Amino acid sequence: MSQLSRTAGRAFLGGLAAGGTIAAISAVRRSKWSTDLDRVNHRGDTVSLAEGPGVTVGATVAAVAGSTSPAYAAAAATAGLTAGGLGLYDDMADTKGEKAKGFKGHVSALLKGRVSAGLVKVVGISSAGLASAALVDAVSEKRPAHWAARLWNIGVSGGVIAGTANLINLFDLRPGRALKVVTVLSAPLSRPPGPKARSTAASGANTALAVSASAAAAMSDDLEGKTMLGDCGANALGALLGLSFIARTGPVGRHIALAALATLIGTSERVSFTKVIADTPVLRELDELGRNSA
Image (tube, rainbow, N blue to C red):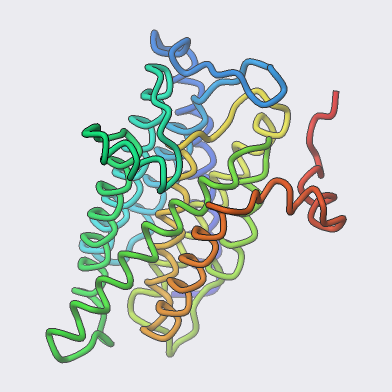
């Protein structure tokens, strides 16, 4: 494939993700369910969670379209749609007074005999992550030969997908913050792979491109406080980023990523990321960049 063809193909995927995101957000906001997705943000303003289903549809459709094999297309659809759907379920549970938040909150609810929406989401996204990882493993020419090593690798990879979905959700507390994190993380992953890259690397790069284009399409309204990702959008974009990562890396990179994710998620149970950002001048400036301060 010529350089011109590759460039045109990437431009098409980016346009598909961005256009699909905008169209889906608009459709949700015009639907009879639009008022059910209204929420009050940290400033007391009403914002719409329509952005979540919008980026889920836009990014997932483009990731599937950019897949180089049916198995990877199935992995992208499984990761994106499952994470987005379960995130939406959790978003809607907030309306019904669901209070369990964080790992401790979900465990506490379970000990009281109640299965929280968040726990359902965690189990569901983890299962989807494992399924997606298994599909990627099935088409990878560099998978471990021994079945036990393959199972371990799939488990670690599934953890990366689920962990990234959770991590992005932790940043969706201020306008534009989670989308900025997604944009930064997707940049290196969206670079075209070299000739010696893994067989799944091209699909992974296209997935990251779809995520970044979808995030860019949603950025303006998010920064202005008109819409927000919610669990739906944050989980979907995060899961697709995790999928992109495992498609481009081997066992060592996946283990490092899983350890980093576990550390960050564990730290979030004790330390406020918002406070850390506010207390760090460089991070604070980047966090506030482009945000509506009125």
